[in-house]
Figure 1 (tube, rainbow, N blue to C red):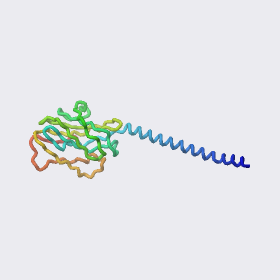
Figure 2 (cartoon, rainbow, N blue to C red):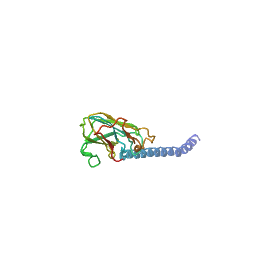
Figure 3 (cartoon, helix red, strand yellow):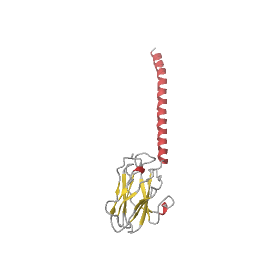
Figure 4 (cartoon, rainbow, N blue to C red):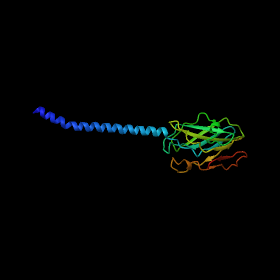
Length: 198
């Protein structure tokens, strides 16, 4: 009698044990698929293009750049690195990128939507310089080349005010750094500031 009851109990628990095993296997499969999808998305995601690069301060032999930190594929977070380049022979684009001089020790990327700055040193006074950058993802994917910021260095110091008051969402990069204006002091001859692609 006791043996019969035990056998009946074992038969009742078998379907439940089987269902638990199946459910566990399904959970593992779902998690594995989610991890694989996230991994491949991470591998192919391209960092956002910077399109608001400006020169906000100029000296005789150096210039300070500013831009809005990009994300990856329109998401918040941060990119892995920046590749900043300069040229004194003409604007920088996809074709001329390889001929431009790479700036050493670029800043560490910050949270997407925040302000980033970098100072480029060892320039020659009185020359026209073109600056551009690419952002690099954690999977070593490069963004498109940014807009080009232009400055003519001179034997004086000049600082430009960059308007950061726009209330655009962090990922709306094109709406940041919209206004670049000089202070009330008259601008010395020979210095100009421009943004290409505006």
